Length: 74
Image (cartoon, rainbow, N blue to C red):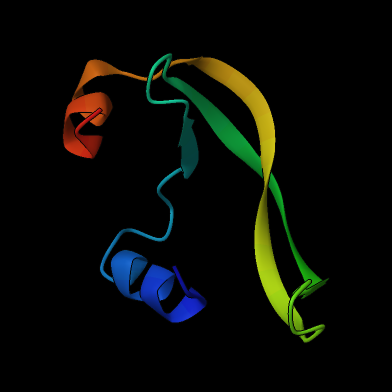
């Protein structure tokens, strides 16, 4: 996913809504997001450096709610 695609997914949502991260479809948990960083990552084959946006996993909140699991089709 690109930043543009992420913005398009979020642009009509309430900007005050909380954002969480869903992880591990076989044992689904939810996490808050601690931070956002941009790192230059080298492609091992081409040696080109590309900037990548990383969302830092925050604290584990608990199990992913059933409604979210269903929406993600997990």
